[in-house]
Each structure stands twice: as C-alpha cells, then as structure tokens.
Image (cartoon, rainbow, N blue to C red; front, side, top):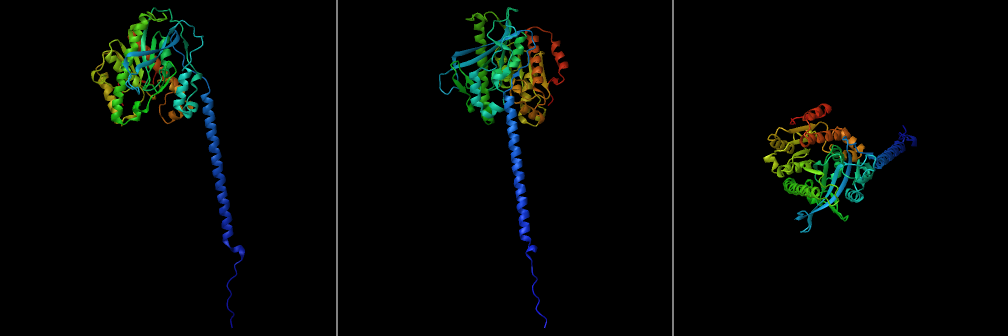
Length: 432
C-alpha cells in the first residue's frame, strides 16, 4: 500500500512576510530622512534669505547725485485751505490741508550734512501701515537712504529768482519717493514743490504728528471698475484743486515770506508741473484748468478728466514705460486712445517717448528703496528689464531738459541729443 503523500514542509526562512516588512520599514525610514533633510534645507534656505534681506535692509544707500551745478536745499510747510472742506474726511467741516516739500538751489556747499530722506514720524507711520515683512525685509531702512539736500539753507544768490515746478506723486505715494528727480531739477536751477494730503496719500502725518491713514475705500485699486472710475474722477478734482491752492500759496510766499527767505525768489511766470502715474494725470488736468501752468510732463500716467476731450495748449512731454506686452488688454487700448486724443491736438512743442524695458516704478526712488533681490527677480521674470539707476538717469535728463527748453529758452536740439545718448528711448507715439 502506497503511503499517503505528506504535505511539503515550509521552513520559516521561506516565508516572505518578515523580509518584505523589513524592506518597507527601511524604505519608509529613508523617505522620512529625505523629507527631514529637505525640510532642514528649506528652513536653512529661508533663514539665509531673510538674513540676506535683513542685511540689505540695514545697508545704507546713496541716491544718484544731482547732475546740475547748484547745491540743493529742502524745506517743508504745512498749509491749510480755510476756504475748502475735505470731502474725504470722516466728519464734515474738516478743512483741506497739505504737507509741502520744497527743493531749491541753495547757497550751502554740497559737503553739508544732508537732510533726512523721510522724517522719523513719517517713517514710523509708514512702518506701522506697511507691516513687518514689507517694512523690515522687502524695503531698505529709509533712515539709511542718503539724499543730497540740506535742511533749510538760504536760497542761492546766483540768480534773482528761479522758475517753479510742481511735483505730484502717483495715487497714494509719498512726494519724497521722487527725491532723485526733485533734487536733480533743483540742481539745475528750479524750485521744486511737491505735496501730500490726508485721506489721499497712503499715510499722512500732520503738523501735530497726528497720523491719518488712507481708508481702503479711497483706493481705486480696491474697487470694481465703475466705482473705481467715479472715485478716480473725484480724486482728480481734489488733487487739481489742491495744486491750484499750492500755487496760490506760493504766490503769497513770493510776495511776502514771513522769514524773508523766498520773498521775490520764485519766478511763477515760469511755472511747470510734472507727475507720475495719477500725478501725471493731475499734471495734464491742472495745465488744462489753470493758465498759470506753462509746460507739463506726464510720467507713465493714464489720462483722465476733461483734458482727454479738450487737449491742451501748453508744451507737453509724455514719458511712458514699456507696455508692449499689454496689447491684448482692453484697458491699455483705451488708455492709448486717450493719449492719442490729447497728443494729436497739442502744439508742435510736444514729445512722446517710451523707455524700453522700464516698468511703472522705473521713474521713482522705489526702484532703489525696495530689496534689490526682489527687483532682480522681477527683472528676471521680465517685469521691467531696465536697471533702477539707469531708469532714473534717463528720466532726470529728459525732465530737466524739457523744462530747460520751455521755461529757460534752451535750444530744442538738446532733446534730440538725448535720444542719441539713450538707445532705450523710443521717440514718437508708440506702436504697441
């Protein structure tokens, strides 16, 4: 009889379970170690990034030197318009107020200690408004920005009086964001007057150090299109009437400055205005409304107001950044049409230039204030390829030369020379 077959014996060593379990455990541990290493590298990289940004934040920087031969002084005023109330104030009856910054040719040698770029109360208020990341890491310490103006010196005796140019920053920006342009103009023999206002400038510090933040509702960028347009038209009226008030005050100052410093020194028969962004729109509308304006410049500002339909009689310069990548945007098409409406009916003394590679902020000190690491990244992403100081050099040269031609009777050929110096500049109406 054949014995029954016994089932095969399976030894422990042939059981796949424990072996596979050990491999999975080792693989899992390896993945955990890799994740931990990557996390550590990320933390170290982030720490290194913030350390670099902190170092950059605490490194001093000198603004571009003015190119004219005059030393530059700076003084400030607070002026209250008792005739008008501020429509943007949260309570009725508040009078309109402006903080005025004035740069002028001075008698002080350039070796004198420069004025603070932005006074302490304004820096503190801006820091609280901006937050730690923007204020402490993505922006340089504004106390370490070295300007080329001295505080309250006498006016240079070289000329009996000097032409006056009004400066208006864009939207809620500070006037001092355009210190490079203001100082350069003053060094060429101009009195440059800029101003900020509560409820419109992003943050405002009054004469008693009261801080007024611009409410979000006063920022068109926070609103949908139809509401934004209504607010823009309202703001345009406020800024242009503020400009007229400032010119009125300058006439009073020139007639009888209580300190005697500016009496008879402001040549308001030679008055110009320039501005950036919404400040450029304000320049257009002010020169349309007020015949005291003899010449103007719009720096990358979309036009608004009745000037779009009526155009101007004064000589005008348009300086725009590179918008060639925005052709498909209907808003750009409309802005271009508005430019055409004004430009086509201007007198012969007109000029329209595009600075290739420039972005919207290439005309202000913000290209130097902000982290250069951040600026470099944006340039790599083609958000404006133009280096910050180069953009400021082009802008200051065109601004003071255009005013020289139309307020000082300089030869118009000087403007043609600039197009040869700066190959980035495309003259003529853009073909975007």
